[in-house]
Image (cartoon, rainbow, N blue to C red; front, side, top):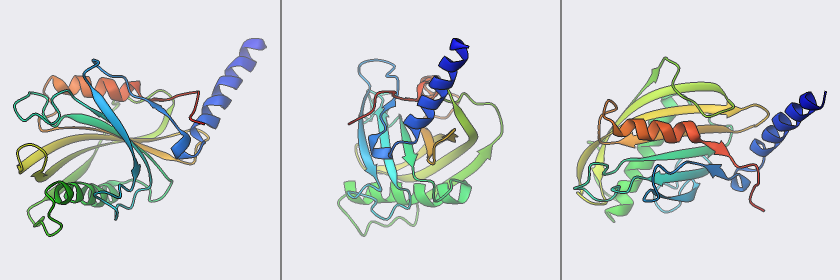
Length: 210
């Protein structure tokens, strides 16, 4: 009986944690090495994509060579969106919001609000399969994407980014979550094993921000 009560307590605690306001939720994203680094921002990001239709928190983890064009892990990173319930994520929404996010980032970093983005493109498709998901995830959906954009940090040249996206919910939570692996390397390269391992590690900390 005590064991059953303990399990109920754990499940209830997890549900309560994931039901907290998004700005109070703290996330675990395992760093492959200490050289990986990250940041946390509010969505929509006022500095480069204020028109983004997604509201919540973005937790980002960058590879060591993220901003170094001569490194094999250049512009390779992962990010977690913890989002309000609307709009519900699907192919159409992801395509629209990814375009707003990355075109806005290009314009802001290039310091050119009139930057021509007519050559930018976003492709998003659903993927069937049992990809590794965070513990406790329900209603899991998987996607692949490609984005053609102007990389504005190091090369300032057109770049194709490859994405694996996974959305899910937690039982008892009103929110939705989206984890994204991104790299200019194609998804069959060894680096992607590292990115997917981080995705599998995602968890909400039981002790939350006051």
